[in-house]
Image (cartoon, rainbow, N blue to C red; front, side, top):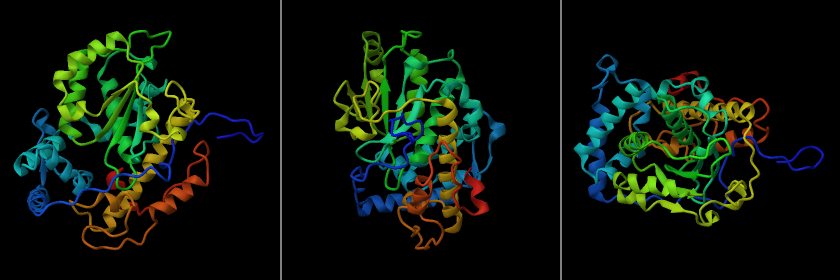
Length: 354
């Protein structure tokens, strides 16, 4: 980014899309057996009419439209892969996640509620890795609040925003953790109880979502912390952890933060600029997806690629004729996000997923 006089100025807003050569690998074709198991799980999900909340029974009730929309084809497949294609196990885990999301209040967290946690930029979503996955930076040295449930709510609010930022064909994120201490906060470790809660939520309710975890500036106390929690991390996840490497192997230099990460992206966190820009951009993308979902019949098992605009053909063969994803990106690119961000065209029904 640059100013009118030609001087370079730091970026303060999210990046809209991956670099042209950053593309997700093609999805593996399902075998006939896997297709049959998917069809069986889909039939189960299509028959669900309610959500059961075990801890807060008063929250149990009819399946909401946004919960039905969450049950995409790719979501069902993620749970099948996570359960090694055990259909009944995948169904139980999906229903458990629906109950958890409702009990946790995940869809009800507001940007204003989370804002005090975000004020120093201790989490940032900016840029994409070489597989087109959004990069979510965690900066423990910028911690600005005492331990509380809202700290964990903040993390999962941001994970949901990462999902909003995923381009067509992408289902995972790259987690970028910088343990460099600040002058105000030298200890960047996390209580083991908090780490266990976060790991439990990630493994049970966000299966198959972590692409890579790139970690730098790991002090000895944090190494000790990782040794403590390693038994609670499954082997597949452990293989995704990369420590103190040349991170341009995984993220293009032009979209890798220059601060500590040796990238070329000059980024400075300004809460008053970044926070409204991120939330407005994510809102627009949710509304665009919701409009596509409603237009295609509001079906359980809809394609995430269709919803994200990677194709205009839904799982049933419906051809969407509304604004394409490329048109939305062009419209967004026509203005800086520091200015008033244009509103994506979407039918009024889109509110079901907002």
